[in-house]
Image (cartoon, rainbow, N blue to C red):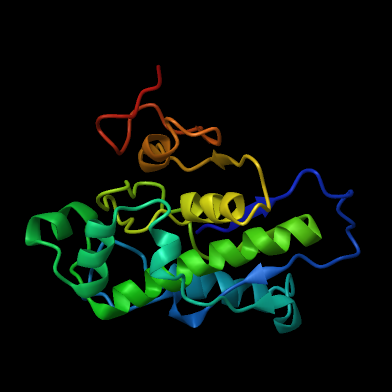
Length: 210
């Protein structure tokens, strides 16, 4: 299970008296066929565990809007997003992502990316915020991969820069898998992506830097 934490380091010191802002949407979850490898229910389970354990209450939860197509284009090619949003990706392309296309999958990805954007904006004013979804670091500009369709963190970073809310953004990726999609997106960008991951794991061919 994962929480995507976003921190704005130039804000005043975070006060422990303030409750952590959480971004969540019920549509972070969509239908998948039975016995699918991807643990889709985890997003709802994270949220329910936080509520049950008293870590959060509903008053500190914000709901995101679906990310716009224009905003996604700051990271992903128009051709790829048009195919994904409209359900015209090929069977081969779908196999690479690990998902069979559905309108629910598109909606899920758009809410998830919108959630990361919202959490990043809240972090600018509150110092720290978290979304119960996100971290889709295997999505490349022109294609998805490894259960990742839209690179939400990259889109959020580009959004903040485009809106002049940040000059540079550092993505700190602590997943067991390398953030190869993020590395490719930011290879020629003044912002950057730092990935700390397992030495031998997915992807089989890791991204390299020069």
